[in-house]
Image (cartoon, rainbow over all chains, first blue to last red; front, side, top):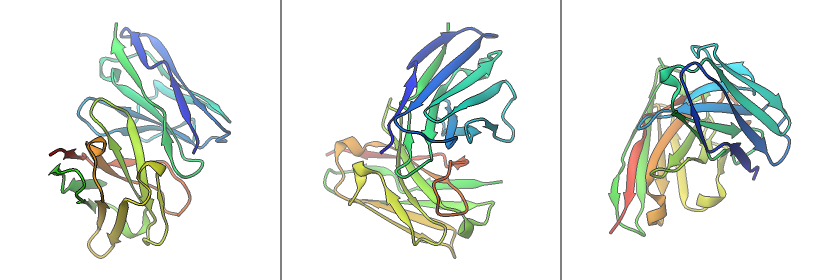
Amino acid sequence: DIQMTQSPSTLSASVGDRVTITCRAAQSLSTLLAWYQQKPGKAPSLLIYEASSLQSGVPSRFSGSGSGTEFTLTISGLQPDDFASYYCQQYHSYPLTFGQGTRLEIK
Amino acid sequence: QVQLVESGGGVVQPGKSLRLSCTASGFSFNTYGIHWARQAPGRGLEWLTIVSYDGRIKYDADSVTGRLTVSRDNSKNTLHLQINSLAPEDTAVYYCARGGQHSLPHFIDSWGQGTLVTVSS
């Protein structure tokens, strides 16, 4: 199984800030990595796939980068609606695996 | 629009089995792989299993290997997940979700709203 490690576990920020979440894989994924957002009590929703491709309908303040074993999710200009949990997931091989999540909270 | 609706959750005793269902609409169900994932209370997401568009290819997470039975009925746009030998640590919200149009690993682009399974005596 490919272990995914996200950091930080919790991130405190203010509206308007630029934040970055990191995801590291135990082995190379090429660019086969996705990012999801999850709000309390709701299902996750896809933000980014193939490391840097923005899912249709997702605001352009979200961006992804990276390849191999290190990836980042950046949110530029935080909006109140962005305070949620974020998960990376590798789909390089089965079993698919998620990072442990990052909770983005209001400072 | 793409819609996935889970059903069948509830309270079940340890050691018993439970069958969850996922009903899809808004897309060609018989051309997509379908995943199941779960989330224990206050915890992160855990991927469980994938069944290919035709039901012939399946992969499971190590944590549930041997305890899952997945079947799909493409004529009814429905997929079933049976979980056997339930334990309290299986308590979670269970999600079905849409994968790719082939058998290779693929990201999830749509999720159901989830169904809660509570394992308790």
